[in-house]
Amino acid sequence: MQKNVEKTIKFWLDKAKEDLTSAKVMLEAHRYTWCAFICQQALEKCLKAGYVKVKKQIPPYIHKLERLCQLLELEPPKNLLENIIKIDKYYIATRYPAYKKAVNISTYKKAEEIYLQTKEIYNWLLKQFKFPK
Image (cartoon, rainbow, N blue to C red; front, top):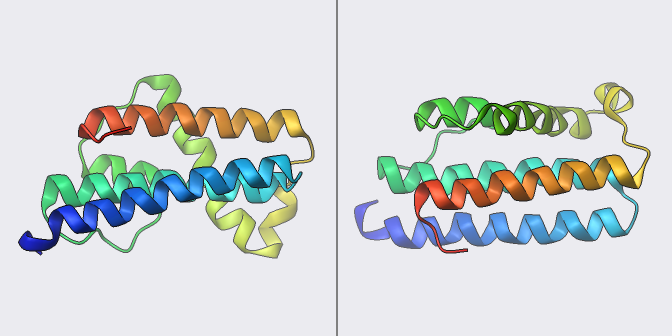
């Protein structure tokens, strides 16, 4: 893994950036719940890039954003942590129909809020790990 650390970090960051772009596309296509799901994915991948940088290991097969923050000993400001927890719920809810109805996002404004919160968290993470923007 040591030789491939930079390559692995780049892989995760490229995928995170791609997901953030895809979230914007879903927002503009009025696919609001999918926008939120992809926002969660962007943050997860950014955290996994951070995990590789800090731990020099392949990230664990977990998807919970708050848990990844804990493993990395990150302490996001309260408002960011609250948004991380809120965005995280879209991972499971969007993927499983039984949960989907509970988190269905029906307005552009709500989806845009999630997208903008994701961008704020994403930029905070880039700063914490000293990743380029």
